[in-house]
Length: 200
Image (cartoon, helix red, strand yellow):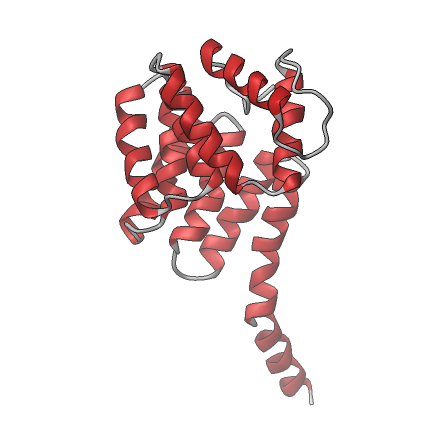
């Protein structure tokens, strides 16, 4: 009887559902902005699942990025691309880190690949807009912003409106509608090369 109980416990410990707990812990920690805890949990997730997928490497890379650990983030994004060169989120996130670090040539190369792989992704188009603005091309940055806004949900538009307000740029009411005042605020952001997603 004791042997059977031990076997059951071992099987439970190795079950995919339990292994997924570390991955879920990582996402919960990320959602509550505890990025170091997210890194630790995603690392357990990678180790326990016996093989790194592009998505799992990207998740940990984003936690590193949010924690300001850019070199580690770049390593994970590059590893994700090695695993799956068609995984657009990794190209986009690596472009973002290059942008934040001021390496606009590398950012531009990565975002062009991301756009080719995911041409209507609002996140990819937003990254492209930020990079173009940083390069001094406010007009093309605004084109990319508008392309991205056309793909946003009302919740996504409202989030951008809040971020504009946090930058001191008045987008009008936070109503999830992309109207003239929000457009004018985005134009001001593009001219100023503002970073809507700057970490506090």
